[in-house]
Length: 94
Image 1 (cartoon, rainbow, N blue to C red):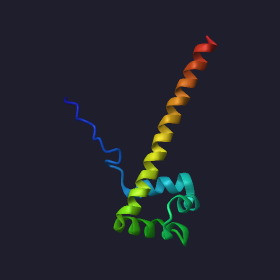
Image 2 (cartoon, rainbow, N blue to C red):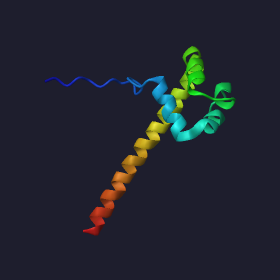
Image 3 (cartoon, rainbow, N blue to C red):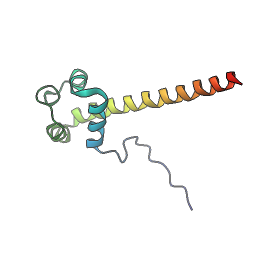
């Protein structure tokens, strides 16, 4: 059994649809429209129209992917902090 190297691209295997669904669930259309000024986020937003636009527009897709990666880093950092705090509470309770 060999260990396959992990890809260096953090977006490897993550579809644009999955990225958008997660951002919409976490932030909502209004926050997306505030952070990334794209008409399809602000006026009558839908997943289908947004995906169509993002697939044809590299600069917009780059901004959406950057926002997603920023959120992922924050989630990982908070999870690490929470684990550390929980272990410190367990240690002090002993």
